[in-house]
Image 1: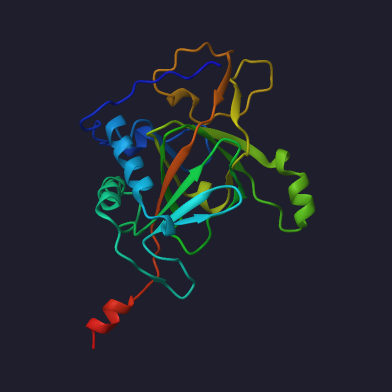
Image 2 (image 1 turned 180 degrees about the horizontal axis):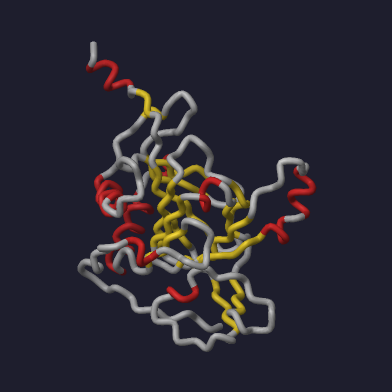
Length: 258
């Protein structure tokens, strides 16, 4: 196995982001941003500790992953908001400071993916502001993007044409931040394939290459452009930060108004 080397932020604070435009991926349709080492290695360990210290009832087990929901359950009539813990509020402070959200994010979904686990291509839906920020912890993954199913196609045709609708991927390294907004959120679908490793044939590798939107930005990469890279997946935890615009008053706030 060949791994993509990159500089690891060990402790302290990462370099402040003064211009998010420097992290926009020009190889992708509008708009996708990738920030390597958004959190340090020490912060990664602390965040993972907080995730796994959560009580068992906080976890919801699905067939292909398990998750924690923080901030409330989004609903068409409005999300009944719940207080976020301090460790998530601090992370939200940093993400909100980048200026992509119209207001402060108020919802975090924590996903745990084991090797061979993923999620089918999907849209995040209209309950959220059309911007999503995801911090990856513990392991890498490959986030794949697809054109939407044509409106005149049935589900079977859409499934059969999945490969033909693939437009490219982004490698999400541990401690990185990916931001999806614009057409990349509203038009294109995204998903994670269910496999235990990711084989990357970089441009120049015989025509099998996927479109790696952030290949030029992979920090410290010194592998030849025609190298065949196989990245083995470990357990990955993602912190997906969103803003739910429509919020209903919680029970405690209703009682306070009486």
